[in-house]
Length: 476
Ligand code: NAD
Image 1 (cartoon, rainbow, N blue to C red):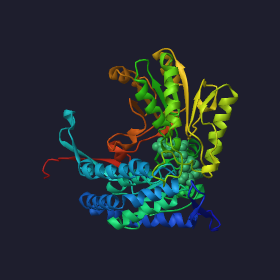
Image 2 (image 1 turned 90 degrees about the horizontal axis):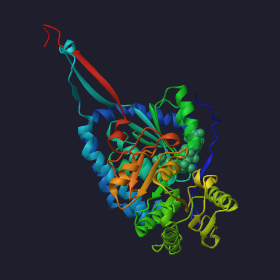
Image 3 (image 1 turned 60 degrees about the horizontal axis):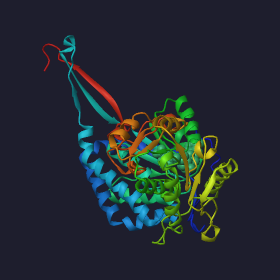
Image 4 (image 1 turned 120 degrees about the vertical axis):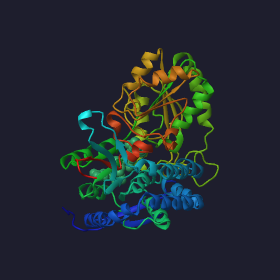
């Protein structure tokens, strides 16, 4: 039901490094959102009927265009989301180029009908097959932290499997979603098959209530829970990719130089605003002091600034609200006895949303910094004595998105990986799994349900239909 008063709300796109207004939009009303879904529904059968070969050729053209315009695309990501341009290229544009490659290479085989052999002899006169059919209209609601790669990777697997998409991007990064739409449309995706509705949470709520067939949501746990309640009432299938509090375990046999570089990169990439960021670090007591020294030394060298400056390694946080959350976590830790070894303060001389990359020692699980998502440039480090203790600490969390284990013994790392409650565990790596197109991306516990990326991500975009036919005597 359409419930709003049709008063256009404003959505403002800002440069987080400078506060400059990039553009203002009238937010989509409920009526606009419902109209987008109706148009998508009307257009979807023809898109499905085009067939996978034609859709794949359109995706190939998208890939070509994105490659050609990669610098332009990366520059807009930097201007609207703050991350350094080289990072925008690596963690957004290249991720999407490769996700397109994955769809192009795999969609045909994925959608092929699958004959089913019946083991039961009493059923031998019947033959069955599995069909993978698109849901119809997929709603996608996305966050601001990867404003291009998250909606793009999800949309590509929805589109190639024959769905229409209505995307409600974060109100902080509307321009990047519109840039994605423009590239898809130029490549040949019909306008009604991929639409963007700009707006805040109320536009997202309208999309959730509109007659979509499935919702793929990426965002915070709080919003995810609200969405799950509404979806449950109407039995709308949902994928929820939510927050994380990813642990990093540095075992006693780890190389301190390698592990400290991993920690600094894993905590500060995208200014710590990655769902897969290293959010808490546990180090074997024998390495604790050396590891902290190495992290502090490397952190002090980082160049913080406007992402458009090629010298910059760490950009700003997205906004004041995010900055306050980081400050609150650091102040709570400090008040409870944590030592701030470097950072721990705003950098107002650089612009409105800058915070110094921070390393904390002597933290504990009584502190917010070890229990709640910080989503900022903070590396809190705590010692442990045994592998069992490290696993217990890693699993002592409401979240379960990803984790990393650092060791010179891969077999030991992989054995411990099996004991961690998480959607992904990386051995001697952090964050990077998001860029592996074949790898499923998902969380357990409060980090969500369902998955995106790879073949499992494609499975979320289709309905499984079983067709059975009996070879009745006398029939062909
Ligand atoms: P958020 O939950 O505030 O917003 C996410 C999206 O939901 C936005 O588009 C927002 O407008 C919309 N929204 C807000 N209220 C809504 C409502 N009631 N109904 C429908 N839509 C609504 O999250 P955020 O601050 O944009 O993103 C940061 C969070 O996203 C972090 O917790 C981060 O860990 C998480 N995240 C998770 C993944 C993952 O893959 N698991 C990836 C990136 C970010």
